[in-house]
Every structure is written in C-alpha cells, then in structure tokens.
Image (cartoon, rainbow, N blue to C red; front, side, top):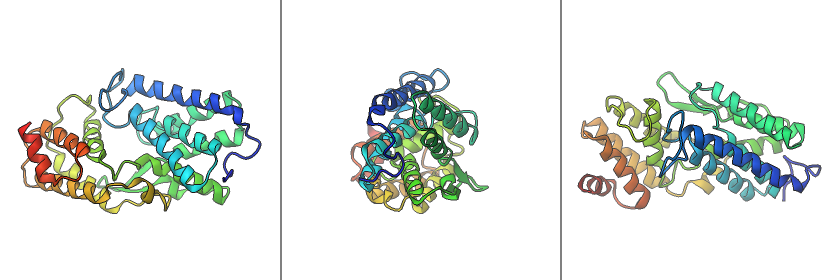
Length: 279
C-alpha cells in the first residue's frame, strides 16, 4: 500500500476523529442545502438540487474508492473521503469564495483533531483545486487542480484523484438528475420549484458539450467511475434535441424522464421520454 500523503507519522487512532469531522461536514451541508436526492430533507438556506449533502457524501465515497484502486492506504483513503465530504459545505457565496471558505473550515477542523499541519494544509488545498474554470459561454474548460503545482508526485496523484471524484457520477445513471439539479441551482430555486424553460436549450447544449469533452484530472478515474458513458451521452444528446426543437413544454416531464433514466439507463431515450409523459 502507498503511504504518500499521510506518512508513517500519522497515527491510525486519528480515524475516529477524522470520521467525526466528515460527519460534521455532512450535517452542516444537509442543514444548509438539504440531504439531497431523493428526499431533500433540511435546507434552511436553499434546497440545492446538486451541491448538497448527498453530493458531498458521494464525492467522499468515490474519492476513497479511487484512492484504494490506486493503492493508497486506509488513512490516505479516509483523508480523501473527508475532503470530499467537506468540499461543498459552503455554497451560494460565489465561485472561488465557496471553495475558500470550505477549505478553511476543513483545515481548521483537521488541526483541531491534531492532524499534521502539512496534511491539513494540503487537504484544504485540494478543495481549492475543485474550482471549475469556465469560458465566456459558460462551458467548463478546466479545473483549478490542473493548473496547480505540487510538492511531489504523490501529492499530485492524491490531489487529482480526489478532485476527480467531484464529477464521479458524470457518466452514471445519476447524470440526468445532476443536470436537473444544476438547472434548478442556476435559477436559485428550491429543488421542488418549477424553473423557467427559456434557458433550457443552452443549458442542455452545455451539458452535452461537457459530457463529450470532459477529461478527469487523474487518468485512471474514468475507468473506475464511468460505468454508463455511452448511455449518458446518448440520453444527453436526446434531451438536447428535444430542447433544441422546442419539444419540451413541461419541466416535470424533464424531471420525471431523468428519474426513469436512473432506474433503466439501458432503455432508448425516446422510450424513457414516453414513459415519463404517460406516467
């Protein structure tokens, strides 16, 4: 097992304290932005459709999973998990500011449980690396982690693996539900409200471009995470075609079709669309 990020000086008895930090992060996220799909409990600030406790939990889970696949030891996997669980505890302040506040929170919490100061600092830096970079048209063109310099090859591998987990569900049956949630967030609406459809075509076009062009920061991430890449691309192309040809009149139809895809991603998108219409 690799022990690059948390070296031999990191005692295994930190595990319980680390998990408590992660649990606090998830509780904060659920209270502020809801527990996430499917029940969206909580959400005192806004019931965010995507950047909620579920997303933080899934990023943490998949960060640990990829780190394990790469040969990192249990303590490294746990640190990666907690980074994921904490990376979005601050939302709605704006890109960059959200990441900064979340990173500072994690570094402070890690130091409070006696995590090595260097590990705490580098863990916070990984959260800064999750900041997405967009072009003038709103297309994701890079992630900050790819622009950073690292102290060692091990630091780079760990950091890029954890950041890769931020989009770990991009090519899975959950992808259309992510898209639905992000469209709600774009309009600053609770997930159970109804957004305007005027920007849906451009949004679905950007979603399709993302799915077509995205490259994970760590080169092995796609092999671990992308269980349904073909299906996700096929579905995204279909939904964009519906929007581009003014065939979408009902937001609930979009939401329901995304749920059908989550249950049966192998079905043709036109069949899922019809099932959602006729339910």
